[in-house]
Each structure stands twice: as C-alpha cells, then as structure tokens.
Length: 243
Image 1 (cartoon, rainbow, N blue to C red):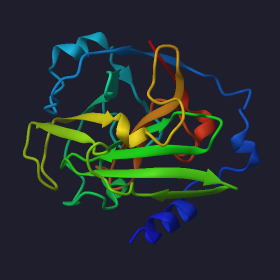
Image 2: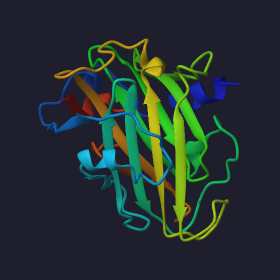
Image 3: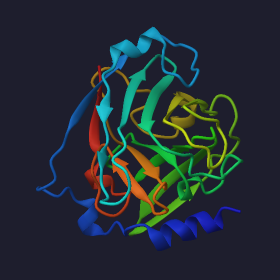
Image 4: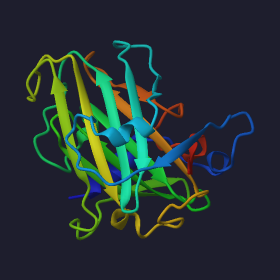
C-alpha cells in the first residue's frame, strides 16, 4: 500500500545530496522559543487559555500563483506532548479525501515537520486537511533518497489527537469557506524512537510548518522556513528551542 508513497517522494521531491546535507552558509537560521503549558483538550478552535502563552508565527507564501491567504501557526509543549495550532484564510475546501492516510498533500493541508536530532536524517511529517483527515509518516533521507512509512501499531500512546474548525461554510469537499483552523496534539509516544526526547528546557530541534492550497487548481506553498523545491529540505529548517 505504501510503495506508491515511497515512489512519489522519490520521484517528486528534491534529492538531498551531499550538498543538501551540509549547512549552506548563506542560509540564515531563525530560532523560535517554545513555551511550556499545562495539558488541555483540543477542539479545533484554538480558544484554550493556554494558547495565550504562544505568539502567532506567520508562514511565508513561496509561490507566485494563487491568493495570498493569511497563514500562521502556534506551538506549545507540555509534560506529555506537543501542541500545534494552525490558522489559514481560505475561499473553498480544495480537498476530496475522506479517509485518513490518503494522499492528502494533493489537496489543501497544513503540515508539520519535526526533526528532533539534526545529526540524523530521520524526521516526522504530519498532515491535516480541512476535512479533519490526517497523514502521519516517519521519514528518512539516506544516500539522496527520501522514503516514508506509516507508524506501526498507530494507536495510543502514538496516536495524534486532532480537530478542525471551518468558518464561513460547511466541512465538505468544494464548500466555500472563509477560513479554517487545525489544532493538533502530538504525544511523545509518537516520537519515542527519535533522539532528544522528550524535549526539556534548552533542547533544540529543527522543524518546519507549512501549508498547501489548491484553490487556483495548482499547488501553492507556504512555509515558516522557506524552501526552494520541497518541504523535505532539512538543511533549510529553522530551530525550535524549548523553554
């Protein structure tokens, strides 16, 4: 089932060669301090008081086409996991995928990439659609090849909690809307195979937060750490520092 995913990434994403694995001195870094919080229940609306501890961070629009939708995120961490909140203006739900673990990246999604140990080319990719469907992949880039696989035994304590709220329309394919919000909780069990886990004060991760939108019938990308061709350019990710 997952061979098409591996083939897709190998064929469509930029090759991470020796040049890509080395830090380009012309690429500047940005550091985001991640504040700690108490655990709370997610609703998709991002209205819990704990979110006041985190500032909104804008995503940069990377492609010339499509609308310049306001797109942004927040992040917090607790004793049990990481919380991410996305917000994006939108005109319609350009996604028809009705099941988890489909090729959600061929429709509207918010995406998270966590690279806990930058010395090892293993990281996690998470996608959430405006129809509240998810895709979780453990990724690796070895010898210039990118591969992804679904976590085995994807259940507690690995299972991600997620919720989506749509404003100005219905949560259905093609529906006109004004915006959508995704709220996601990543339990540390999902990341237990990685180094620098669980994150404690002073620990640094690399990460990226991204968006894909297809309202113009073509892929339009946004990202916190700007990439050139692919969201899998690990050497361009920015830094998270846990407070």
